[in-house]
Length: 261
Image 1 (cartoon, rainbow, N blue to C red):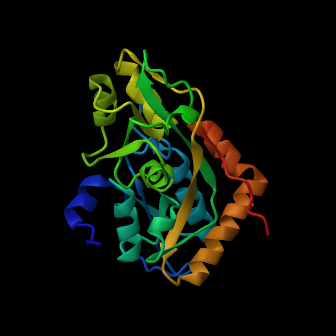
Image 2: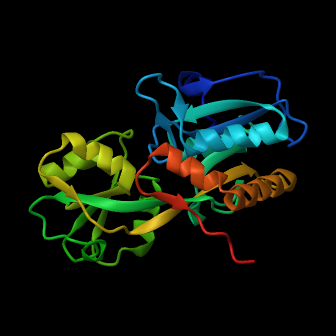
């Protein structure tokens, strides 16, 4: 995995404070938090003020507040960029979906939120439910390395997965419109936004599954991981997490249930 370039970080850097941070919780002067800036299930921008909010931003700020430090919010482009930033010491924590394929170089917290995944199809498509997706002679599009693409690669038995490699945008929607594939899958919020300017398409009414959203820390940073898991327990119990989700106005996200202990 390649190191996240300084140019990318600089271009996508959203907010900063004192740069003299270290990674150990309780000793850092700044908590550096990486997240996917273009993921509408995690971040939202106020259309009037331009201020960035949403679950990733609010949780990073609350965690920093509880630690008594400032926060650097580092927006990046892909899940792998988040993982690389944490793995390479460019961020102390990162917000990214859990997938078993991503294990090994970082530590995942318990899930704090679920992001519901579904599909867009043409209006005249025979597909009415996610149960209709895995059928012979069907092509299903998803963006490479997205959670749903990893999930479909593991679970599809009859349909063909078509992985898109272009940066996030409307390419998946256009592929459905042109008939290159029968459906395109990603999170419900992203598809809802894309369909506003895409006549002739519709969303399936049900969801394939909920992607578990986690906070990652560097490998073997057990102190940081323990503190993050305790933080998630606290904000779930207190209602702060639920309130954050409600404030965001984001479609298709939910509080993840507490893990069975």
